[in-house]
Each structure stands twice: as C-alpha cells, then as structure tokens.
Image (tube, helix red, strand yellow):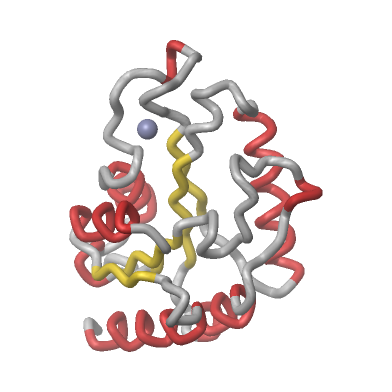
Length: 173
Ligand SMILES: [Zn+2]
C-alpha cells in the first residue's frame, strides 16, 4: 500500500531564508511552521522536504555543511515532536563552478526528479500527495510529479495551507 505525503520546499516555506543558507546560526523557522507540521504529525501524514541547493554547485558551501544544517533542522523538528521522514536536495546549478554539479539535471525544481526519487524510495502515491512551496517552480515540480500543488503567499499562512493539504489527502482515502 502506498503512502500519502506532504512535500515542502525548504527556504521561505519552512525556514526563513537569508540567501544560500547553510550556517546553523542562521536557522530559523518561519512563523507557523511548527504548528503546521504538528497538524501533519497528528494526522499521521509523513513530512518530506525537497530543496534546490544550487549553492553547492556554485561552491558557496559544501555538501557536508548542508548535511549538518539538515541534521540540525531535523533535530529541531524532533525537539517539537515532529519527525521529518526525508530531505531531498538538488546540488546542481546552471552557473555551477564545480564540474560534477554543472550538468543539467532532472532534480532541480521545476523538474519533478526529487519528488519522483522520494516517491520511489518511500512508496509514495504522488497523485494523492501534496507539494507546498512559495515559488512557481515548486508548484510546477509538484504538478509535473502528479501531486496537488499549493502556493504559500503573503495572503496565506502555512497552517491553513497544511489544513487544506490534509483535506485533499483525506479525500483520496
Ligand atoms: Zn539537480
């Protein structure tokens, strides 16, 4: 049986972005992130993150620095009682200076590769799942993966969007 899930963009969706963020000192949830994730935890819906981290390809920070940042993110979520099942990232960038991260890839959003990879790894039913992000590229990645996509704007807040996502997922049961 396949799982239904919610995929989140990371920067400016769950975390306050300060531009190519990798320092643990810069870690900060956006308002409403913990209440929103708690709704999912209570609904037993697994939480995933899919994030473009082209700063790696651009040589601004390393894979190891990003992993340490993600370990901190997951620890902070767990401290609030929320497990994050997995985090997918794309290290590629069109302007990459590191050759191995320069090639065009199918994971950089708006491509759906990260969601497809997570779906395969975790047995997720993409057509019954939801992608939430603050950019059109997030919506496009979600839609191309077959998910319902919800846009976070200044007029919406994350707990409301997550409530909507839970309704969508419950309808699919
Ligand atoms: Zn990529």
